[in-house]
Image 1: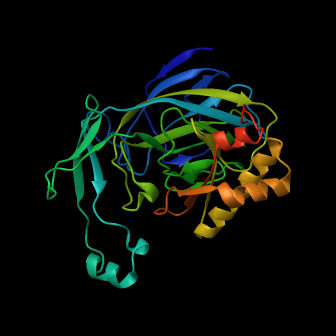
Image 2: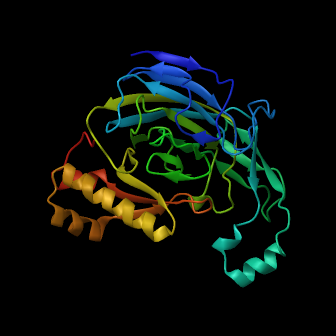
Length: 313
């Protein structure tokens, strides 16, 4: 097991079978950097085109189609003192009459700046002020877009998502989370980018607090284990993630993937349905971009209480 330091010189606006930037082994750790969604680096310089530029892809030796790649986000640290957000909730997420009055037929939207302080671990809105003063919030960095290369040579824009992962913008993909991704091509080809210093559920204004970042992650290869959609585990929960539109389709796929997972862990199928009926929790990831993301969660303590123990995958 090795630790690799990789500084990207170019980025991709698609997830796909690009030439790998680095070959790594099962168990290796990578320390690398990302630019923000507009292609701006730690010095706030525009170094690549906007559109969720991706660092990578990273080739995992021994990975083949039908395997599963486990990626643990060990550390996610903003590398810039300025983050930016849009200001208005997307019109399609509001009552149509209200949205028409607010947007006035599609006005150009400004960006707000936030001061990122990694010592106090806060993000402070620089303007406008709120009645009680400036808005200051604790940082909670997350990786907004990541995934493996999709099958059949596809190159898919990094503003959307599907079975391979992609732009899920789920606020739970923070340091300490382990994500499980299906492998479709040799080497897996893992990409990542679009870090947010903080984001509410759904990314309803079209951004989190967008920043450049340093990300450390560790990979593990699970041979011969096939999953249909991304999965993950945090300290407290296991979760499945599905990406589709309309939102109800993402809901269906995430729920089905969780049923499969519980059965794999040893729970009889009907009992999995009974358990989820009373104990499941749902959260939304991205509801702004082309594919919506639904998260289906179950608490680990609950599973342990009925006799299911880790490892969870």
